[in-house]
Length: 218
Length: 218
DNA sequence: GTCTATATTGTGATAGAC
DNA sequence: GTCTATCACAATATAGAC
Image 1 (spheres, each protein chain N blue to C red):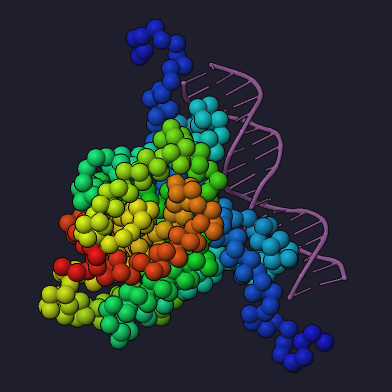
Image 2: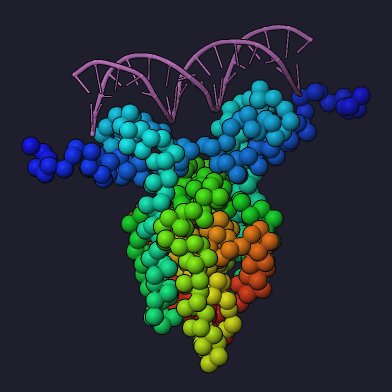
């Protein structure tokens, strides 16, 4: 009497499917798609290899599902923040706070995403459509059409140096994400363990927005 | 009469070994170590698979040689620039110019290095020793011990906000490298082809140092 | 040094019982 | 839905001729 509803047994998003997806997420993130073994995913999910194929049909489809889920947590919130009606300063502070927060809890996500993006660049356009419901062009325009007037106004009043919205966004995102992507090298060179790296990021949380905002001034 | 010297046939760094290493570099960079096939490397080098093992003994050793060579082109020049006696402003301009130059010619290098770093973080300390001849601590101290007084002086004169040398370096490097590491996403979102991306980087070359320098001001 | 041919494993995927 | 057993093939590595 586990299932008290009269829904058919093949209910979508079963607990098992979720366990497999979660396990696959952990394994793919630490090994990369090419380096991951379906056996390891099955072990980590506490099920048999055959079950992965039952739910996801192939390793490639499972990898795609994991990649989409990971990207969904990283890109849409950025787009939402940047296209909101907030002032530019608040957007900068919001993006810094959001990314340093999410990535402090998932420090290996940037390395994984960069890795997969570089191995399957041709899948990017479809990925953007899947996670935003828009074409890449629409998705970027939704952000840029809000940012451009904001920047133009600041430039007109002399508060800000001339800068395209594209460069502005890339600068902001680079400063937030790269330290996590290069974390192994940062930790090795600076002699940091996991705790030390967290402290480094905490320092960053308090300073980074000010650095970016100062960088915008003429 | 190809070899006119009387050196024994097994001369080190033979032309064939170099061809294999170059081919391996290209293949590993675009596929990642786990995704690369020795067959593809052999094909690209115009030799047989067996020859890879003759020269490098295993795929793993070949991968290590390629990774070291790639890292050698990226990290030591940064350390040299930052520990030089130049003024801080010139260092910022020098690092931006160097990275945007090297990476414009090797746009896939950052993705590859980040990928490998994240899959083999435990190899980082040895890698640093191999390419610098110093321990990681010595290597970082050589840079930080020069930067810290430079920064302290600027802070004392009120030209610069307080900032650790570590954060300064991470900020600078993030802004240079990340756009290349995230290139597939940047190109997809902004609708850029290879030429458009190059133009984007050229714009950056002229603006990035000023952005960083402005960001340092109080 | 370079090749062809082969050994040996690892790994994604499927068949079929329960 | 979940398991065991097995297939089919891909991929690294080696043996041995030239």
